[in-house]
Image (spheres, rainbow, N blue to C red):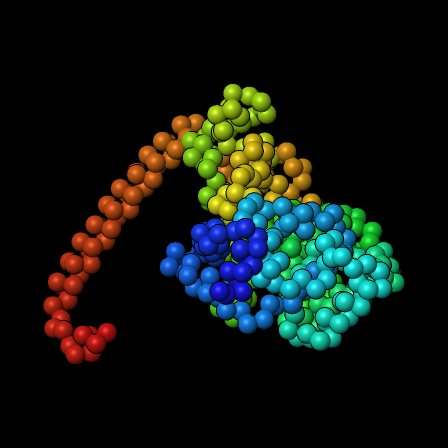
Length: 363
């Protein structure tokens, strides 16, 4: 019996549920179902559980809460057994001096091998003195721990881009980890982040031996390649010009588009509409517009949260039907122009009466 099977038995999780988890990871990573056994094998054959140091800085612990409260089979439980969580202020039994000794031992013995997961922004003004842990500033700790890790994964908008702490006027100089200490990080934003995306990042490492490809903001492309708007289940109502204009209205009950209520889906990149929180829901599914929490500086850029974004063209009267008609006319016009151009080209070629050469054929 493999170690993972022993762990599953201890957790009272059967093999089918484990494979369901692997299937979810394949879906998040955008892989076909053929990868399910490969993901299971990658987890089972991990010769040594990767060591993880989980740091808390300026935050609300919402990302740890989201991670630990995932649905059965608990992703948190599975990953806590697949990984070796050697330091985590919220869940570890150790405290005080013993906790700091555990941290020092891990980053010394596993230097260059451990994964650092960070939630929370890092205050940088006044040499970082707005946040101290165990007698050291968060800035000092981040430089040492993140600087010596194999990889640093930031979870939640605060760790990625500063979050609410970095909102204007930002008196503490709060920044995301990458900007605060100048290292490359894998950023999994949102407020809180969806734990399936952070788990999938680790699974990607176990499966392919590398971290996932990221965009210019450090976000994994498997989760942040497309906008909320692109896959929103209310998108057809947007195209048809059907909008909620007051919460509690008949239009709201019919689940019309929330754009006029301030939804920031057209400018927000995340996979919320495809990968639900706890397999249950997400903000728009619960009747509230997207606030853009996976975007940098969203507390400043996306406010007021209940006013619509400028520059997004709202379909006019007639909605999608009118749009389709216009597209149809445009295509007909383009086809006519193409036919005319082809006729002119054919006539010209005939007039040239030039025999084809070897050079022409090669071209």
